[in-house]
Amino acid sequence: MVVLELTLYVSIIALIPQLIVSQKIRAVTISLRIIANILVLLSLAGSIYIIYFVVDRSQRLERAKKELTLWEKNEVSVVVSLITMIAPSAFELVAALEMYHPRTTLRFQLARVLVLYLGNLYSLIIALLDKVDSKT
Image 1 (tube, one colour):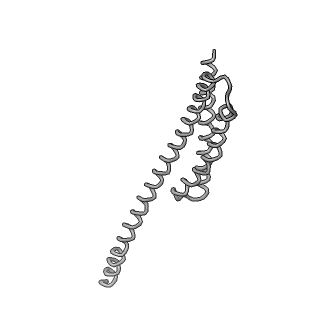
Image 2: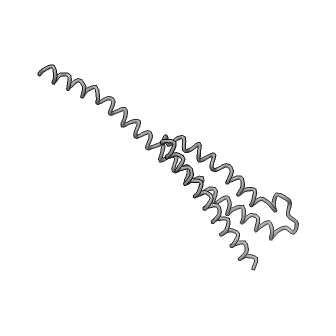
Image 3: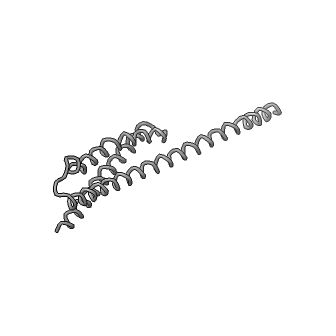
């Protein structure tokens, strides 16, 4: 009876450090996931701002110059293409921080890319509508 109680106490005492370590790992994982989501939100907001800025810049250039260079004519489409090409790869790097199961990571990746595409499309439409309104 005494031996049984002693082994029970020893097993509980041995379990306490494991629980502390697992709680620390869980806290680090949660912190990394929060940081990853903040990075994703910043990159989404940055891409929307960049698109709006480039459209506004091209509008100002069209008003100021009569003859535009090749870059100035095509900078909006080039910037949108670059964002569409680079951001999903950046999302994949950020997803490595989160340490989710690969299936969950893939679902989050697809959702992030969808939000990126929709945000870029809407910001481009709004910026171009502003550009058209200013010409009339």
